[in-house]
Length: 401
Image 1 (cartoon, rainbow, N blue to C red):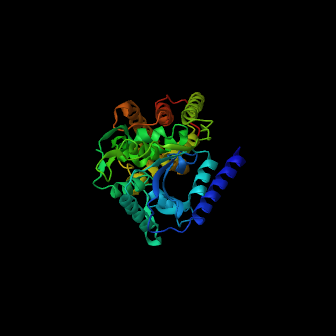
Image 2 (tube, helix red, strand yellow; image 1 turned 135 degrees about the horizontal axis):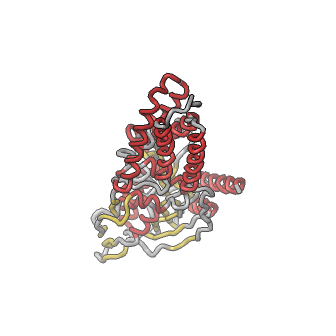
Image 3 (tube, rainbow, N blue to C red; image 1 turned 90 degrees about the vertical axis):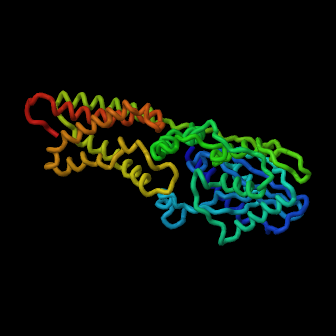
């Protein structure tokens, strides 16, 4: 299974590379027979494929047949991971031979639909001029933002610009928050969804406008199908034709064998069992607390960094900092530096009280949490409550570590 997946991913990447290499020579002037359409590709399995993809198909039967897309990035860029975490990743635009572009998504098992844009010859040429300018080496890169500046919003903005004064459409609130929209596309990727919910703060729970929701390729395609424009004769016509399915998806989404909720519940039961046994034996089990709280502290470092230094949207005002906090490295420090243990009782009492209030307040906070979050918080609360209870236990002899 793993080898098949690696082979499929490798083949898709090779096809994508061939697509860029095989892009034909692009002519600056479109013929009267040229057509421009929007390609919408359904999601894949990798985290950067979860939301699908958008491409602009430019077909001139007298010259070329290409797809221009804004989703190219290079893993080999210097400090790619660090720049990505900081929200300083640069993506670029590229042109691909249409056959190889479509073949790469067919190989991935994604569906692709095409919606032809009803543009005048002047509008087609204006849009094409924008694309050619973007394809120049000095203009290819742009600062990627996974919500406000991505492979779907770039084509949207260019098409809006080409249609300036002719588009009949009014923006307004959608029925989704940004978090709702993200969760729709991570239903089968439970751990990715948990990661998004941990890293994205309360701002993600704002209602997105219909234009903002177009950061999702399928929502962009859907919105374009509802728009109208004024054509060269003054008539009002739909912006796009009814989308045509070029090929159906064959990919079957595979849910993780162990969901975050199942893992959290299992961990809670294991910790509960160990806590009961250690209470009977009058053992604090400092090693377990050091490991558990250090994991929460490490996650807290990431949350703190995203809140304070990342350029990613909605990473500030994150209530997860209450239960994922760098201060939770204290049990590890206490384990390694015995004189610190005199402060243990105050640490666990404060944490127990804080997490108790947090668990009670979670449904009322202005931030939506992952369904498994209360169980993860419960694991920390359980150990903090146990250590607090142990401090009030009548003295029966020396307490062993």
